[in-house]
Structure formats: C-alpha cells, structure tokens
Amino acid sequence: MLKVIYKKGALTGEGIEHCILETLAYFSVFNFPLSIDEIRRFLPPGSNAESLEASLSGLVVHGVIFKIGNVYSLNDQPDPVKRKADGYARAQQLLPKAMKIGRFLCGFPFVRGIGISGGLSKMYAHEKADFDFFIVTKANRLWIARTFMHLFKKLTFLSGKQHYYCMNYFLDENALALRDQNVYTAIETITLIPVCGDGIRDFFAANGWVCGWFTEYPTVMNAKQSPAPRTWMKQLIEGIFNNKLGQKLDNYLLQLTTRRWQKKEQRRELNYEGKEMSLRTGKHFAWSNPDSFQQKVVAQYQKRLKEIKSKWPEYFESISDSFEE
Image (cartoon, rainbow, N blue to C red; front, top):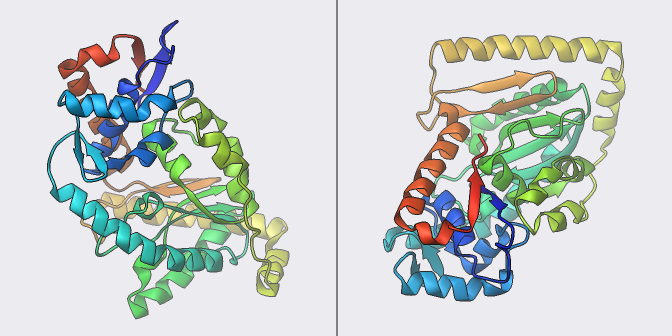
C-alpha cells in the first residue's frame, strides 16, 4: 500500500475508499483478490475501519471495484477468484507441514528465529508451492548458520523435497531493521508467520516503522513467540564456534559465498522458475532477489495506482501521497 500522508481534517469518520483502492492495487500486481478481513488488515492508522463495509459497497455500486463471491477485485474476472480459493485450500493443508519444518530449521546452530514468508504467509499455495523461510541468526554468525542449513538442503535434493526448504532471507541480530522500507517490505513484514524464536519478536520490534503503515501491526509486534529449540547438538556446535575461530570462519564463508554468487550472476544462471539468480550479501544479511523481484513489484504497484487515481480522482482528493522506493 502507498504510504498515505493525510491532510488536516481528512480523517473525520468519512469513507475509506482510497485505502481500499490502494490495497487492491497492490494485490492486483499478483492477480490476488481480497476478502473484507484481508482488506481490513492493511488499513492505515487513523482510517475509519467501521466504515469499511459501507465503503466497499459504495465502490461496488459505482462500478469502481467488483465483488465476486466473498472477495473484492479491481476487475470482474472469475479465474483469479477460483485460483485463490484453490490456493487457500492447499495452504491450509501445507501450513502445518511448513510449521513443522520451520521448527526443525530453528534447531540449527546460531538460528534465533524462523518465520514463514512468501505466498504461504498470505494463505495461498499454488500446485507446485514451495516453503519460503525467513531466518534470524545470532549476531556475526549468519554465514556459519546459513552454510550449515544449505549443506543440509543439498541432501533434500536426493528426495526431491528441496522446494520445502527455501531459505530465502537471512538477517542477524545486529541488522534486524530492514534497509528497504516500502510497500513490498511493509506487507511482507506484517504477513510474516512466526514459527518460533525470540529473533522473530526482535525483528518485529526493530521494524516499528510498519506501525505507520498498518493499524494492526502493533498486535503483530506484541504477539508471544514460541521459544527456539536448544538441542545438545546445537549447543555443542555453537560452543565450538563462539570464539575468534568462529568469527574468522564466518567472514571466510561470507567471502566464499559472495564470490560464488557473483559468478552465477555473471553467467546469468536461472533458478527453477526460469528467473535470473541473485543474492544480496553482507556481514549481517543475505537475501535472494531473482529478477529484481522486489523492485518490479513496487514499480508495477506505482503504475497501477497512478492509473486508478487518474480514472477515479474523486476518491483521492483529500490526501497527498508519497511513494516509498
């Protein structure tokens, strides 16, 4: 959603059509219609949530948006509605399995928290769904943790289960505040499903800026998290590398991984989805961004919202906007 800067007197209990259109515009990038409860989740602070149902009805009556079944969309195409229903049913079946795998991954050395991101965090799973995991590690031990986890992932290729172990985003305890603060990262943060570990609680707290985007984010920040497992193997390995040797090894693994991925990007290697592989690396972070996915989503959202504002300017007359790059 576009970060809204309200003019004086704009929030007086009136309709919240602009908030609805901003939210639907973002999810239209993914061809993903929303239920009223999903729209409510993304309302910004100060919006009149009590008027949501009336505002939705008004937009439908005036042909601005469409209601198909129990979801709302910017178009009247039935295919995305059916696809979402099928995806929701699959997500309900897969989420318990993803939670179980997440708890297993949280038992790896130096892992301090695991969350589920991606499509599954929005309760959607396509036919060949993978499990995307967000990982918080101990400060200055991210690369040891990531290496142990990815060595294990190589074994999963033998059974064809590698898509259940997509560890796409790593942050350590020294860098929990997201560098990119935009519509994409705000929505990914509020929809992140905690699995276990205080690292996820600390991540939510470090990104309090999301409170400026969504009314419900404080509830996410204050939710109690399940503790991370402390197995004897985890404690043993952490004890071995919790010293200068571990620091040197972590730095070496960062350099080694960075060089390997630079070569992959130079060769323009593709992942299993046919997208160019890309990994952003640093001492305290590692995250994949195939085909500059985040930047493309933000750009498409901005384009769609501008089209909506041009077509229906009357719903945006009381606000000014500020796109976050």
